[in-house]
Image (cartoon, rainbow, N blue to C red; front, side, top):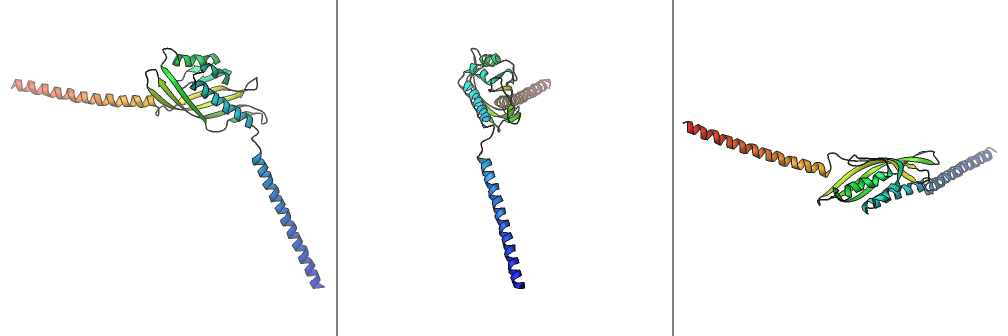
Length: 224
């Protein structure tokens, strides 16, 4: 009788262990499926990010093909743009005027090729299900060809605030572009010319000193 009870107890214990393993395995399987499903689901804001990528590409294309009048479609009517030379643009019409001033007849620049790269996805804000504004920043390469033939490659950093406009399209509300004060071709040119001037000044100083010494020696020999 005692042996029979021990056998039944062992059978019940083994059954409980098997049940626990089955549940645990089921839970793990459910967790894995959930994670796979989560990874397979597209970003809820995927369409917004795709539109913003097209916006960035559209700006590049308009500038690189010199279609400056096409740029205003990508900016909000109440825009505020600080350009690389720290000009301020506050109207859509001001964008085209800015480029015509620099690239038009008698302008300082002949051509500009630009490449813009975002550091990451736009940080969207507003309603969690329906964001209406965002913040994005990144880097740029602006290759300027001057009217006199010189070539100036400029590395830039930029920050933009984008918002969903009344017609449902995303546009740039504010944009600030800046360059490294110590790492740009203009600074390097000035630095190089300063070294030349310093070397030239040193040479002139030695020359004046030698002439002065010769003059005093000659004067001294005459007095003798």
